[in-house]
Image (cartoon, rainbow, N blue to C red; front, side):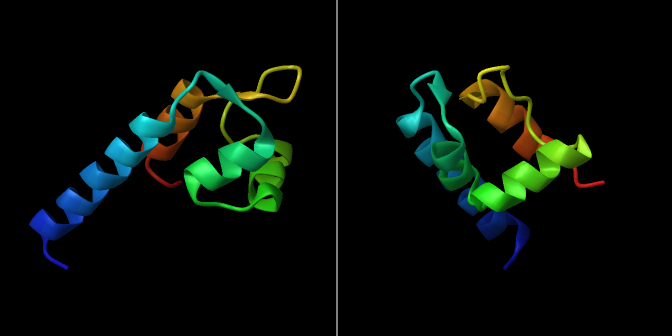
Length: 73
């Protein structure tokens, strides 16, 4: 896949995410939104390098987007 195709795929994914935004979501919805499993998000939270989570366990879509945009460590 060349750079243009990769960028198009990334932009299509961002549009898909924008179309589903409603503010806050639970872990199941957050995992689907990020293309990950609930267990993956839970493990990342325990390690301290997952997306920000509110005290009630909910995720903000803006925080999920910011986390997905960060380069992998």
